[in-house]
Image (cartoon, rainbow, N blue to C red; front, side, top):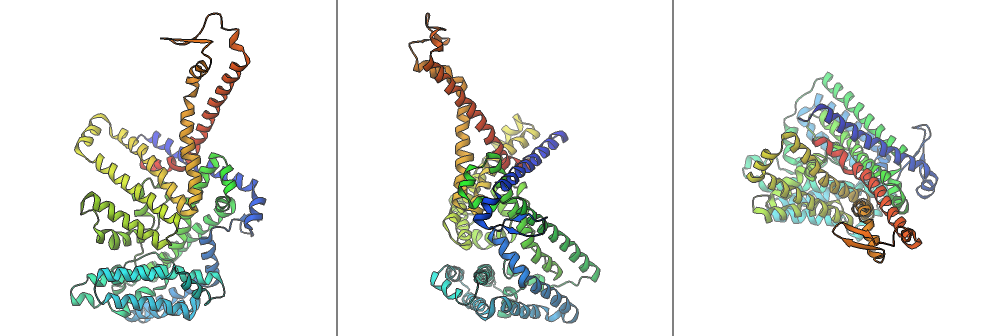
Length: 549
């Protein structure tokens, strides 16, 4: 354990990086408010004293709009029906919840939407009867690919009057694809007839149409769902009310924090404005990165927190909620603890079946690559998603390589011999900063696209490395000037010295003086730029690393 004063220093430094960089983002948002309002039509409401709101985060605006319209009422209806079924018809509660889920789907997606979900479910169930893993995966990928076909998209758009209804259907089918895949693969793995009894079409419909996770997840595998649904435990009224009150209180706090961030910092609008993003200071650039990933974290606390609360009220155990990204310092940790349901799905149904880590180094690399390729394709298969997947594959591969190297007996003996436990923790934090920087970069590519990632790569990494080289320029000024003015200087073992008769009168000649001033200004500018680079780099990657010491 590190000294208490050192831990306190790290905590204060982390909080300082966070709050000061957020303040810089707030100042830029206020300075360019009119410009951003004209370009992106900022919304005005009375929630925070008339402050304008950044509406350019599509996902947050989309789900908030649907929540105000119908989804909140349908989720409350699910809670009421589930509790009534628990009291009056516990044995038939799964069937009742299935019927309610189908009805709720019809309310928001209409008959065409219900028909599409039924079609995907029936096709997956029929293919699962062959009990072939290859056929089940081909079926899942084929159904997923139909969501990307332009001709099919045009047909779906004609079913609805607004784009939001079409996008809700697309999101729903995308998530349902994982649920159908889970059922199909689990059905293929079951051998005993007694185990296959639960893998019937009614149970699949109950699993697919379970409404709290119907539109946006989180992901729950079929064995976990069926086991918990069949072994329902009755909760007392007092415990149910307590779970509901605490859950609603947390959801309101998270929703309020997300809205506050959207009102104070226009990070999404700034990201959408390439010229403005390229002109802001390095402090602001680092603050934008932190604000973007933290807003994404808080957003999914709300989007996953609502179904998780309803699942707990139903007696089910939901996947853990995302862990704060400011405590993430590795690619493995990000995937393992942010979307736990998706991580479990990828490990169980993609990584292990492909081979996992049981077939040597090349097998591990191939299994990891296939896992990230699938998750990229499932998210949409756009160019920036493939770039994001490649960065994650490289990051996970590098981390595994370093971990295997450090775990060797030779390196372990050296670390124990030459470094104290406290020093080893500090070295771990220093190495983690490299991984964290690439992790934040990959997240920015995922959230903002390739252009945002390129801006950060150029300004933080490439420009920062150039600033490092400028730091040593002041030591080379005499050599640089002397080489250009050999008639005034001579070189010896002691370095460059002025020739006799040429110093100091000729030293102050105008051309030479201008060169010295130019070189000095260049070195001074490099130092200032390097300090700005350190500020942005600290905002992006050093503050999360403090959690690992």
